[in-house]
Length: 372
Image (cartoon, rainbow, N blue to C red; front, side, top):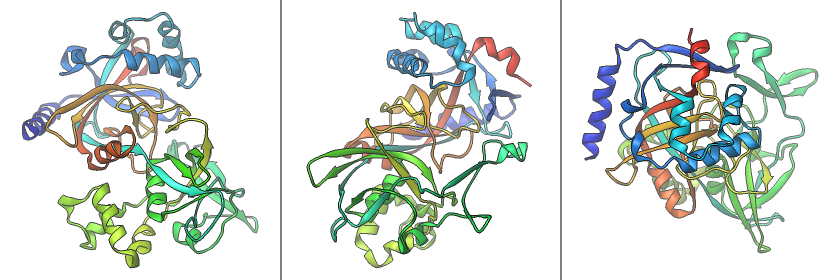
């Protein structure tokens, strides 16, 4: 069955290569390439219960966490009670393609909310700091200088009147930095994966549990330690997963630091008052929240996905909301699916590397004015 589902993706890809796409400008920093299609052309659209998606959409609107392009339809959502009727009446699905207008099949990975063990006091057991945002971190929106650098940021700090780079992961590991410490955690491996996931919980030794979420980063490029481990021959490509990476790191303490420091990027956190929180500042919902590349898909947009379940042969599909971003999420037909909290969510998220098709739902009243 799984082979059959993959073949369906390939057949759809072959038939779609010759389709002319259009560019849609949905927000100042987001330009998408796609083609307007009917809901009948989306294979599983009629099968899904969309009530959760409508509730999430209303919540975004009520908290004013949507782009300007969605604000008019937010008012219409206030009185909506039939989810399918609401989305079909007010939105047009745009089948997304890559930036060249060619391939339409991308990659769906997964993420989850981890639980770490920690303490507010540094000790031999709890010695890896979770840092807040450094006091000297500088963010520069490059678009204000070069319009072609849409959505790009420069992160650094001022030193003797010059902007210099923030310390890399290796440099942060070697010395203290000018940043507050939220708490100290037990495992360097857990801290690394928390940075990859973006949000998590820390069970403190005093009995309390605190929530932490992404606040900023050091500006160094994200580099996959999974790819590095394959290149070094540590793990076979066919066996790479979050679980296999974790097991190898636990079994090879002497090489662990070198592998982790292959990724110079480093995430800074902030304390939160709720569970896993995305870039919109809203609590994420399992299977209904995805992380996207916001240079193509504005945060807050409804996005329908079709993929393959990581632990079975079943098709996986739903109407999600683009509520998060991630350093490794690059490209238009690319998404990271939130699976929730706990070991089961970790197993599914860690194994997910599935083919993906995406349809972005765009308010109908904007379609005529958006196409180039």
